[in-house]
Length: 411
Ligand code: NAI
Image (cartoon, rainbow, N blue to C red; front, side, top):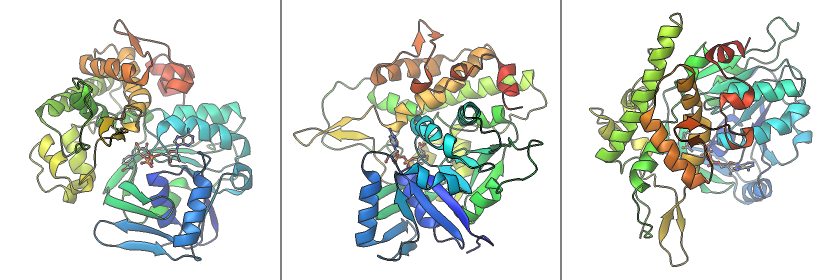
């Protein structure tokens, strides 16, 4: 396995599925000194003690097992930011987007000069959120990298000790804001090369230069329409078992998945007319996105439905459900499929649609349903409401109200 010539202090923020895989894989890279920073509830303690008892392993679907034996695990887990951030060479945040602000506020005052911060994934709006928080703390030398999605489809099987990887993406896009440009003489670690070294050969990281374009390559358009199609007419009766999520999609889900993605493409087309020099052609259908990211893991690629239903990376993944007292199941509308993808995804696209005067009937319909489930108000009488930073990542929450302000924000 390729590695670093000298010791590199890698801090991974988070304690969920993705943080587990990344910690297990990256800590075996030569000279990578990996620490997980996990401030959520008692996860740091649970993870530390589970690992001390059982070691740590990442189990890939093809049978490959990346194991670290009990007593010889190469990374540690802490909840103490002060003990780890000031000596970090790179910080990679691996949590749902609704916790990015919490981690950014925690690390910003402690971040060493030039230390890059990576959102993996960043999701739409990570760049202006992270940049705003760093600027508020006078940190103007760190690069910000945003990776379009998590490299893996993965789920923890035993907290702190075992995680399963159902699929690894072939390629993922990223964007980079280099704050150091012309500001300092010294440069920090190259975040792109370092991240690729930590991930290994797959997925390949592909740069998208323009942040506006990158925003449209993220896909908050996958989970909300599947949730909406399944649960919008649910009568409240608990189910005996959770239904399949991706592989359980039907014609109705297809209609909303295609409708919402078509609207995102309409917005990209309007941007293309406004900014002819930016190439938005890669903003493709949901079907094409799945084929680009999972090619050899999808045996039947003929339609969007067949891509979802046969993608082996999605084998057995279920709707997020909560168990009732009598052992039945009700949908968990607070899960990231809505709580993250609507306020940290669809709303960003929706405000940009407003900026270029494109109507989004399906996106609005899904946001209006989701806001009732989340107990928020994002759209009233067809008009976007003002949303606090704590409740979503609309550009307007960061002072970006026009498309020109969006583009100029990163200069
Ligand atoms: P997850 O659902 O496992 O994340 C939960 C974790 O987030 C918690 O264990 C905790 O460590 C942290 N967290 C939650 N609330 C917090 C709070 N209030 N304060 C601090 N920390 C908090 O997420 P997962 O699966 O690791 O996904 C990470 C990101 O990757 C998400 O953006 C997700 O949409 C994306 N993604 C995940 C995929 C997967 O297969 N797991 C596939 C594609 C994308």
